[in-house]
Each structure stands twice: as structure tokens, then as C-alpha cells.
Length: 272
Image: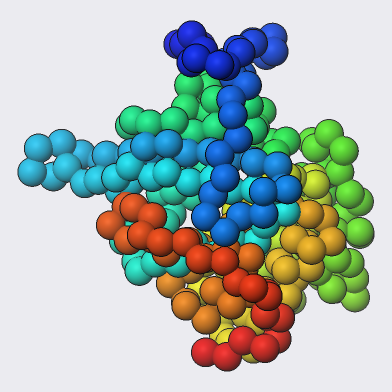
């Protein structure tokens, strides 16, 4: 089913680009707290709400989120467990739809995109990194990455993606032959091999010790810096805030405050 198409607001122009389920609206760019106004806006959320259950079991996982994220930023989304961080990440990644509100990826209305359009969006524009690596045990590091490069529009080679995360010497090893940190770096290589504009990381160091976690954060930071990928890391570890351009403090399904760092700290300078 295609989305309901709404008329443009005052001062806006709308256009359907011809792909099923994608409705574009050219809307004004709103600046976000601490963001560099020279960077193009990638995401814009207004009143984003997600409710699970009903009646006494009703849970407001998102309770009206207003947010903008910009090209090339490294964002740390910081908050306790149960604050709605993962729910927001799933909305940004097109894995789930909101109950109410608006979410735009550039000039594409994700709120009203149908499943075919969301699949197109996830395949071409978003890379996902989760706490657990989701590698296929019977495939080597190279082959795990090649699963993505074989279906992407303009991919890196698996070798180039693995080299970017420092795994060239381990390229033909199976997951069981790799440490936890190495497996997570294979997962990062797999996520970036399609050259996504957006990289979404859900507790990427949650299953790792501190030393290994730093190596993984270094790989993520390098991808952001060298490829210009908008990178969002969700975590409950406040130490990671120092490596971000902006830190979004999240609680009770809402953005509580946003602050920008004058300088980003190097991952190897972090201690927790």
C-alpha cells in the first residue's frame, strides 16, 4: 500500500519522484542545537512518537522527539536502558514506523513510505552495527562482507572495507578464528562496504572489554572521518560522549538536551 500523500505546507513544494511509496517534499532546513549549519541536513524528526501496547500496558517508547542530524556528524545518543534510544535508532533505520509525528530522510518522507520503499532505503542508504555481530559462521571475513557488496549499487571491494577496519591480515579467517573485537570489525566492514550515507550503531562495544572496545571505536571514528558518513552511536556509557561532535541526552522517550563538543576526543584517549 502506498503512503497517503499530503499537500505541501505554505512555502513548500512537493514532488513524487516516481518510485513507489516515496513522497518527497522540499522543506526548509531547520538548524539543530550545536550543529554546523554548513552541513546538509540528513534527518529531520518532528513530534516523533512510538507507542507499544494499549490500555494499562501502553508504553510510550518515544514521546514526541524533535531532532535534526547532519551530514558527516558523529553523534552519541546517550541515555539509560529503557530510555527509547534503540526505538529511535530503529525509526532512523527504517526498521519500524512511528505511531505519530514526522521523520524525513533528506526530502523523503519515511513516515509514509511503504515497505518496498523502506527496503530500498535500508539497502542503499543505511549501514547497521549491533551489539552482537550476526556473522555467518561458515563464511570467512571476506565472504561475510561480500554478502553486501554483491547487492549494493556502488560498493567497495570486501578487501578495501576490511582494510579500513584494520583486518587485512585476517581476511580469510572464519568468525570462530577471530576475537570478539575482530568479529565486530568485520561487522563494521560489512556495514560500510556499500558506502552508506548513514551508519547506525547500537551499543557497538557492549559485549567487549575496554581495550577491545577502543579498537572498535577507532574503526567507527575512522569511517566517519574518512568517508564522511553520518554516524549515530547509542550507548549508556557517558565516556563515549567526548568523541562526538554532538551528544544527545535521551530519557523517557525524549531529547532532554543536546550539547556540542568544541573538539572531538580520540577514541584511544577514552577511559572507563
